[in-house]
Length: 150
Image (cartoon, rainbow, N blue to C red; front, side):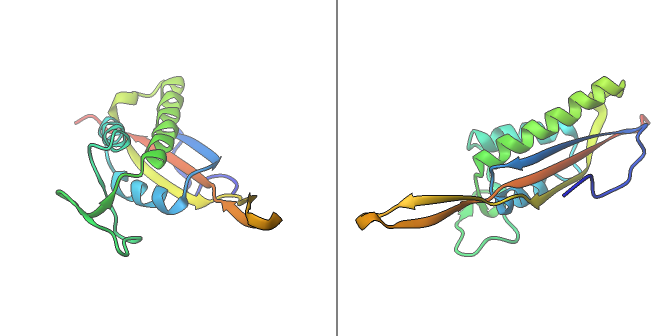
């Protein structure tokens, strides 16, 4: 993946891209689906609560055999994914401050996850054998948009 999925006005938006982060793309997809369209401060609060395992993430697609959590239905606490997505959002917010935008008055315009490179490893087994152990990575993109004051 090279670049961003959408063309946006550079005057009112800021972007950030996290490449080959060692987090499951499925878990990142569910977290991103929950925070898309939120204000930045609300999204950061949500992600911090998920990382502290105080608030579950509602799962809508990858929910086979998934237990229900209070208030959301089928859900989980994807701590690692929440921490990494929070890092990318904070990076986009710092980019907005650098550009001179009001970083407190922004919302998440686009947040997308794509599969990254597969890291191939081996796990030793008995009798001198080994089993392949692959680690997936994710490419996370965030575009923040400044809200109009009304």
